[in-house]
Amino acid sequence: MSFAVAKIGNTKITVHITFLLAAVVLIGAGYALYFVVFAGSLLVHEMGHLIAAGFLETEISEIEIWAFGAVGRLEGAWQIEPWSEAVIAMSGPVQSALLAGLGVLGYLGYVATAPGLYVPGRFPLLEFLVRVNLGLLVVNLLPCLPLDGGRFFRAQLALRLGYKQATHKLSKLGVLVGICLCVLGTVGIITGGRWYSLVILGPLLIWGAMEERNMAAYNNILALLARSQRLAHKGALPVEELMVCGSARVKELVHKLRPSRYYVLLVVDRQMNLLGSVSETVVLEAFYKGQMDLKVSELLSSSP
Image 1 (tube, one colour):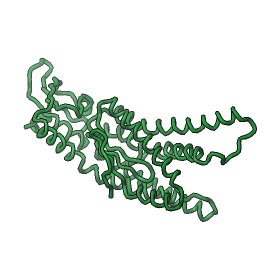
Image 2 (cartoon, one colour):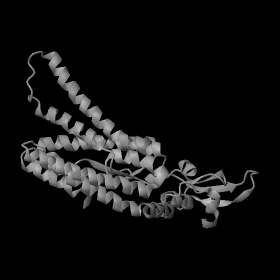
Image 3 (cartoon, helix red, strand yellow):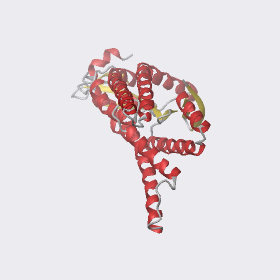
Image 4 (cartoon, helix red, strand yellow):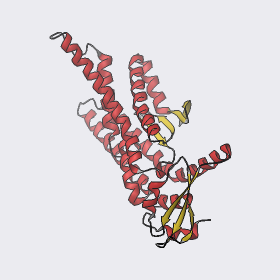
């Protein structure tokens, strides 16, 4: 359950109920400043995704803020190049690493200016800043959905299995990792450790992975509807023609497509004779279904 709170450009910002619960708990317990540091760290993390997406001319349609971090949803994630989605996914952890590094430099700067006077715990908010961003870095590098590491590996896996199957596999891994975290945290608490964060993170990861898996079934339809809505709103969309050999594979063609325009593929034989045309929609549907090695000439009968 999420609530829309703002919009940055074409990106909708929503807040998940788990984040609201975390805010209530922290502020109610008298840790309002710590909550501000936590929320600010999440903002910096997500700004990394937004900046990278803007640089690569790819839109993030929604950022959903959870208690463990935030989930950015790319517009047409399954139709951009894998390296582009990988760069966007990793840009968030890079921002967290940089912010943690700035916190460490703050410590080192103080120690350098006042040698021998450093007392651990003297700057609790600065220590919390470093811990939070290191936590965001480590957690989001886990190779499972809905985390950034999972999005990185989905981009690579989708080339062989298709977007939907890759999402399902990494979502299952997310559920498994979440269960392991719950078990590990519970054992740690029973044995006298303070592993409460794992007990909290585990169920959130399971929840997020299941939502990601459920959303995968609708991404194709939503993307096509969004394209139709943009056409209805603007009256026209840029169209680009690509000439391709009939023996070209779907996995080779999908790299040429971009969400910002619509493509029509002119299919020719080796003698450059025109065999027909294939719409972008048909190619993307084949890619989405995992038909990676299908020849474009085999799609001619499917194109309207």
